[in-house]
Image 1 (cartoon, rainbow, N blue to C red):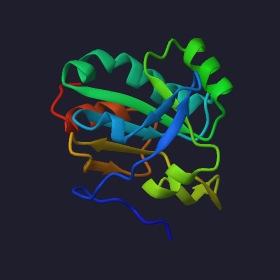
Image 2 (cartoon, rainbow, N blue to C red):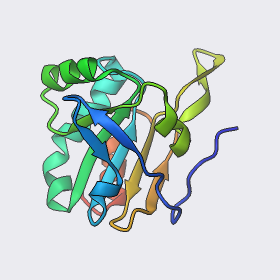
Image 3 (cartoon, rainbow, N blue to C red):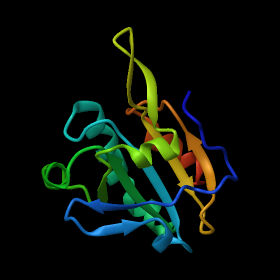
Length: 157
């Protein structure tokens, strides 16, 4: 059974590389607010919808003090192509061995076309400036999800 994070718990620290192979660590972002979303695979229809919704909401999220980061198991080169293809204006992080997915409870059993499989559980986390989980959303739908996140952080959709 996958361990799930709860509001108030410390956000697990991590260091990953982004689409340009630059190192990004959660610890270096302390003092700011972070929206971290885990998605199954770059350039697939649902993940493209979710990523583009975050892109289209980025200005008000940033104005409210939030940094958005996407995490998938994709290699940096694929993340770079995804970012360029869809004009994504935030960083995408590579977690090929799903260690960070595991730490956040975003890897585990899920239903896929009626079968139970192991894989990425589409999830989003809002992290406060002290590095604690404010909101932990699991098994989210790609469509309409960003509007829910905006509402949770006090931004009109």
